[in-house]
Image 1 (cartoon, each protein chain N blue to C red):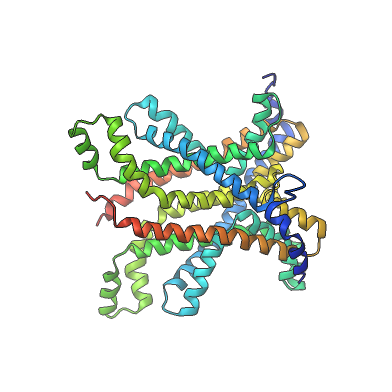
Image 2 (tube, each protein chain N blue to C red):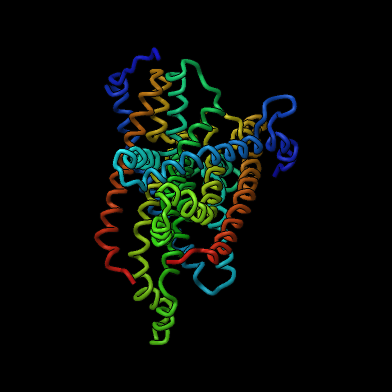
Length: 230
Length: 233
């Protein structure tokens, strides 16, 4: 057991070569997942609401988007955007940005499904009552349905955030120095303590994800009390 | 945009063979891992439902730990860390086999088992509790009650999420490329480095994954329509 290697390199695992060099390690992983979830929220909201529409030309693009993205491994998307960006932009996109785009597009599809399920889960009477009260469909959505539905969705968003945090490790494959790649670098440099290094970052990921999962379970329990019932 | 697409290059001769063998390995590693994950997942779920404290504690920490850590790091852990975990003779045996494949199977099946265990638990919990109590009151043992009353009902509820777990497994198997298992993603990467046709290679393998997923999700929908209507309480 050579835990001193882990201890010596712990700052590198936490924030990479930061003050002297680019930000990396756990800090970059967290940054990627926060950026990813914020971007994905808006795409997912749009996709989820579009999928609920009765007009086929609004519904169809979102069905195609959601079903395609959910059917493909994230690793594929990361590679795909990585190779697509130079073709579209004419220049190479930095790895971290390219991975972030893949995360946003990927998570957006899953959030789209969460939004759809959240809106459907509300009792139908809510929409009918708002329409009867004289609101248009859009107003009813904006002022009655979404405020309730989005609040009920918070636990699912947290779960999605947890799985995105785990998925940021995949940015490793295109060379982003987030926590996993930082660990691989430390391992390649030292070569004698792979078990200790990987166990350490497993625990680091676990602490973050477990705290968030526990939080989302608590929220779920709390929210069940305020649910509008049919 | 001055990039000329060249699909033929990727879809002919040797490269086509690579893609086909990649699909083969993807399906193979998924099937083997799914089988082990089902056994392991069921065991873990049953342990969680018993009344024995150490078993509950073990299975709870097993599922929590493996669900809350990235699969990629787990793969690295099994692949690079096995050296210091396993005894010499087991290592020698593993190195004689396809070690990458074995490490991939271990990581995938442990990870998937954690998710499967939760699905099974959720399915069994969704059966009203008094069913178990009634069967026990009628004189069945716990095992009998599980076998003849609870599980047959839970099974129908569990099947659809189980199929989507299998699907996730196929998608997750793409991560095994990082340790050199020659599955579909690995082959796409390989073709990219031989031909510089990354975009084409990855588009084609994306389409293959998509086909697998769509076939499976259609079958889930079919199942839901055909069988699940029957079990409305």
